[in-house]
Image (spheres, helix red, strand yellow):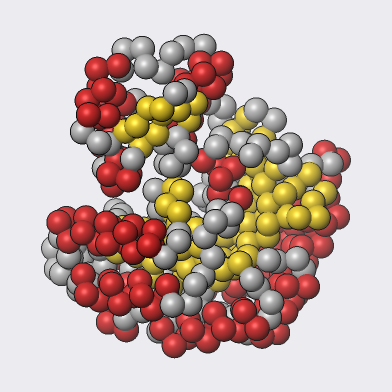
Length: 371
Ligand code: SF4
């Protein structure tokens, strides 16, 4: 449901070390000699919103590895937030965490600062797969962090998993799913591995023993089937939740609602404008609050709207599209959409258009044809 409260995204761009597949804006700790200055700039940027009296109903610390923040750093950022923004009493406050970077003391500080949702990056429960990915933890480390979070009163937990990992098999993937389902986290994010240019995996692509397209497709359907049998709703292409536990913050992105993002590489959609801080750490550190406003044209907005909305099982309303963009979405696309409906990839019901479960898996090709 749309609200007048916004989301706040806080980017923490450092990790213990870079994983082999990662193209997110993050740096291994050995490359980071600007940590303190970064936290100061981040707080300055948050404080720059002070006059606007913005109300927040979601806060999301992402990265990178936000759980690498010390308790003092975390509390400093939270004080800036509380000083300059109006945090709603029922805020959803998520922190992304990696196993091996959490302690009881840190989790208690998170909890005392209002954190009520933890998103833990696991990817796989198998040692060999975690090693290939370049993760710093094993399954036991994850279990320890997970139990600790529960003991410290974090009741809403997401676990990130991955399919298409080198050396992963249907059997090993099934075991990963079952082990995680036994813990009953409130939310599971499941991503297919992508070999992104510029990553070590991309360079090694000819030598990686990847499961192959057919197996990846089977893994996707295995997950979808197993998770739905255990009561999880597949509400977004890569996200499954127990009833009522959809991620409020991420829903704002997919529903084209407004949010502000602070820190390196953070994007904002605020006051009808989309802008970002760019990816250059030196520029960010030198030019506090210099947002590189890039306003989108109408066609970009419509493109963004369709791309994001069709990620959600709820899809979008054709009349909402018409009232936002002044054109009929079906015009000029009727035959194409009918062919997708006949093939079982799309569904049109009353005023709503959405992708089906089958459509989710091939969403990239569908969206490319549609837009
Ligand atoms: S922990 Fe996450 S953000 Fe950090 S390098 Fe690995 S995948 Fe990237």
